[in-house]
Length: 565
Image (cartoon, rainbow, N blue to C red):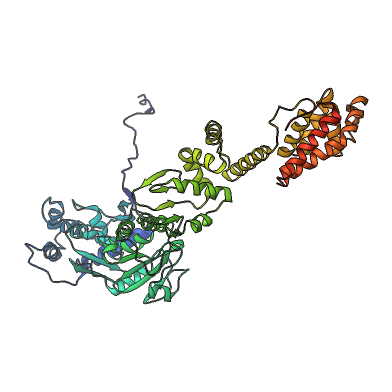
């Protein structure tokens, strides 16, 4: 008899055996299985082992949620060996939710094989293994089966917490304080010891950077620090310590030991800081206190990260001040404008420019560090940055024309060109204002010359061109002009080079006639330059007469003819 053909399987054959992986279920490791088996065995012996110590009076079960739950736990405890009854109880849609989770856990405790477990993943409490049976909430079964874990066992009581009950759990105890948040001293002590910030001290705790006396007396500091009060236990934490909490922020490291996880219910917070320069005897505005409380509450509710708390608290205070001047974290009285400007980092020209802007302000303003300029309803002038350059960048568009006209007297047309160029270029304002000042100063000095540019006859006009160029850019800048000169201008250029001892390498560039004529003009050119140097560079205004006489002398010897001043 012929053999049947061999079975052939093709990829995608529906009849092939496949491994099916169910999400949220895994094979427990030996260590996890031993822990769960031990916890379930203990739970079966004492089904109330996960229940906290009740440190409050309970009402009647009909009206008291916690009393009703405890009564249901007691009923289930009495029938913990009745597996048929437990199976029905864990599947009920009605009834106490904690009771359903307990019934399912007790049923799992009687099973021989606990190697397959479910995984509970929480972004707050992490991943935990448990055996899932029935319709109970996963978080409740996790808490019941991990009753030795100080944080996970709190999950059982989340619905009660929503109804106003408070629970506190730590390695040495587990209590319910009733409908008032009363943190046990042992819980406070252990929570602070195990927080994400290293704290020194016992009755008074403080982080690195503080000492006991400062925390005890509630002293302010220039950098500020966080003051916490847990039922009389004072805690001080610096902003630097908060910035280093990393993956585990400070608030969760405390609050996850209570249910609901609300640290603000058991701790009072304050930020011990005042702006530098703020009078010690003067209270902060009431609005500052209100904003500060809002920031601290938001931080305790995890809306503000640890490393942003210090800045948020400072901004809450600074944004509430309605008078004076503020630069960074420094405050100045309204009568101390010069002290305010001197405190800013920048050149004298930059500070002078900001002074012009302040003169034109009729109300308060806030210049943020990102360059945004906001009008203020109060009179306070506040710069978040203490450096002049970014402040001037932010203010230049609206105030640049006023700065140019007030500081340098530049006419509107020319000022508009300079203003627009700086808007696009955004050159460092220190260099920009300094160069502009030198340019304007040079132009103003040249106005001292008795003749307008281009009005003198040749070659006197070339001599004055050389003088103007030398006054603005230095003698070296005139050498190339002399080399390129022609005719009588070449002779004048040679005389200029002789006066400044610049002929050694340039003699071959000039013909003999130019050198002869220029050589005859050297005494007059020397007198003219000496007078110009005194008038323009040494600010000797009386030298103007000497300049006129020297120019007339040069006109005479060069054959330019008589000139009028």
